[in-house]
Length: 204
Picture 1 (tube, rainbow, N blue to C red):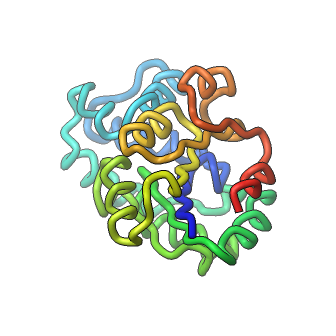
Picture 2: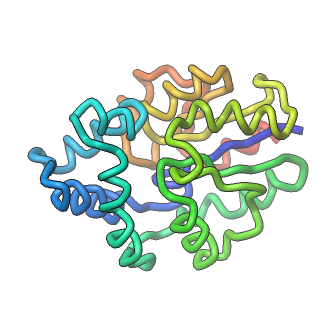
């Protein structure tokens, strides 16, 4: 059995606009706004998102408190699932364990998966309400499900995903249909770099 760990935003769903707006609104609410728009927003994901916020002087407790009301107003219809992922997930889950590891919060992910008819596919969702570090979430999953690191694949769409996957010692799979460009993802040197979800089936 292999363990497949999937990022949510940019891998399973096209949510860049809504996520950017949510983070932008949260930072405005705590008087620490982004000043360079999308470019600056995407830079937050070149490393761990929450560590990037801390490096900008953001108090994470204050940020998360500000996010509560804003997250409650998210329009899930503004996010769209990547349709090509659904059959791939259905195929992989027949023989392997699938988990979501994300910087997003678990209730948001759970509701989106329900609306997109993707609920029941993932064994577990480890969001920001579990812990902030994706590396630590990966190691937690490895220990809980008793899977050797060489049989664990983390699928992400940002350079921060790849960095944390490497730090955890798992196989890293960069995808090019998400938030960071193919060139940026290639520069992060993932173990695999895929342009199409079907390529994930080579691991089954």
